[in-house]
Image 1 (cartoon, each protein chain N blue to C red):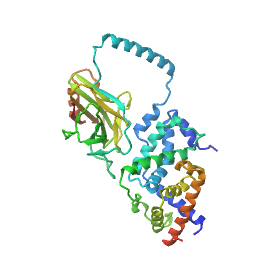
Image 2 (cartoon, each protein chain N blue to C red; image 1 turned 45 degrees about the vertical axis):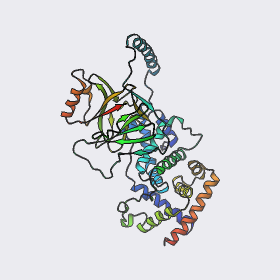
Image 3 (cartoon, each protein chain N blue to C red; image 1 turned 135 degrees about the vertical axis):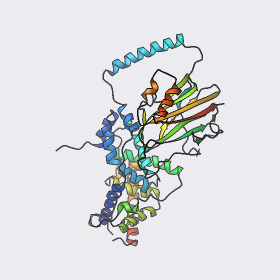
Length: 244
Length: 181
């Protein structure tokens, strides 16, 4: 066989194999990351205004906020070593999954156990009691796989009136999670960290094919608005994490 | 005649926030990256690998400098590094075979007969050296530009040339053994 013959066979092989690959497209998350790079009109003017506003807000916070107040949740990046062990359930995209009627949401939580340096998966709908108790240096994140493009909200509560919205957030401004692939909240390599005080934190995940803006309405409590969404067909999953 | 936008120009547009540039780069490279990840790097989930690769492309878009490397060499370098990470976490599996039914021999329109296709896949798997296999597949992805092959593999152009030459000889002998003329 001469080189030309080999080249002809291989070029046909590349063409044929590439033709058999399913058409891949960028996800919503990717497009959001790209469009977030766009400079806005009057950008510098806006930056100046924002800086002035931030200084004013910080001054007000210092003057009026009670001492010792801190957010429920911090989000930080973790530089975990390659090949870190992952135990427990993990989400996989099933091949050949067709369109389902209604929205379904596969959800797996992951805890990073800092002492043993492993990642442990858990099912939020049936959490392993041993896994969802976090030590001070532990962190957690969520992995989601909706059956269709979904509007998603994630909250963490320490009381009915004491809650924090984890998603969307300033770091993850888009409020949708695309179908057909595993999405991480927060986006990798970030993780959520519970605050230092011991106690239970309730995490609520709401997913719907329709916008969830009614959750921002001022009337009623958050839990009441979440139940309204559940009644309207949204998928609601809630579970408890304990900070020891 | 309108000239197609180059890959490097698309990267400039992507770094400036134009998502159409991302769509075009995906159209141009996702299939080849998928093929490279499955056939040369033995990744069991090549579609996921392609997603990870493009996420890295987006993250590093503002750092990409055309003077350092072509986009094609750069993105395959990212692909190789990512696939090495993924392959370490999975049991080594044979190259993911596309469903033969997807490549059904439909007579005169078939590019390669099924037996030739299987022979090529088998011979690629039989290449004993990872570098040779990767260099060989990249040879046909990079339009036979040895410099780009070397950049993607993190090796010199001379070494890339050696790997490709050795792989081509083995492939020719293997295909002849399997009855491909």
